Amino acid sequence: PTPPPSTSSGQMQQELAEVRSAVDNLTREQVAVVYRWADGVGTYTPPGHWNHIAAGYLQTAGFSEVRAARVFALLNMAMHDAAVGCWETKFFYFNPRPSQLDPGLRTPTGVPNFPAFTSGHSTFSAAAATVLSSLFPERTAEVEAMKEEAAISRLYGGIHYRADIESGKEHGRRIAGYTVRFAAQDGAR
Image 1 (tube, rainbow, N blue to C red):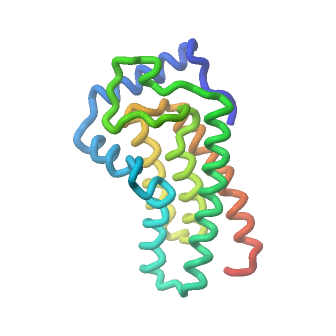
Image 2: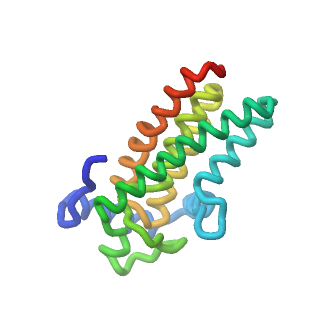
């Protein structure tokens, strides 16, 4: 991804103000979104969340064990690549979290101990949604809505700026494109 906004830029100040406003004015529904997608320590984390979603789709579709294994393999290939790409980006740019620029900002779920840019949830979710949409086209609207909810949950949670989220979604979509192209050529459709 291209660089995040400079911490001294006007754009960063606007994005920080957006995070502060979101955290200070959370609705009950937004708090529920934060906790639904928190996926922190001791949970199955974002990839596990998406595997759980895929398991429901597989059960409904009645796929054979072989076809189900293929779905999980493709989904997890994309999410693995998303993790590698996202964390490489995080440590390349080493961008601070919102609470590091605004120490008065209190987050509902705590602050992850790694850089902000790009959002892991956004990157994982875009990769997962791209793969699942290609495998279950009838579920595209549903997985796209979940991707958007997972991504915005990080802003509501006070741990990501808008740029982290939007760049993460684009990065995850591009990364998953490799998996989707591979799946189209593997002869298993």
